[in-house]
Image 1 (cartoon, helix red, strand yellow):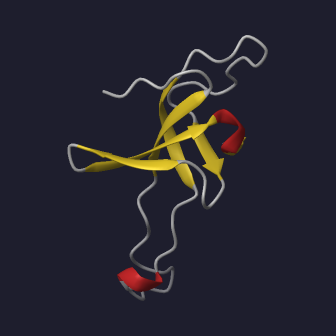
Image 2 (spheres, helix red, strand yellow):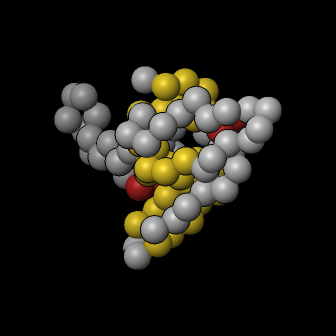
Length: 88
């Protein structure tokens, strides 16, 4: 598995909805990038900035935050803790 360094966080993005609340299917071209995910791993933090998130936290992050990586066909995001907007 991936082990983030310093103040980095490994996030598994939430699945994108394929249907609206009214039952309409959303085409792939119209789907928005998810902004919510689950923290899978965290780095040790920095000496002047301890880690506030922990494994298992559901977080909200910016639309263009992080770097997308694919491992064994699954997509993950690696981002700095400062890119996380809130813990849900």
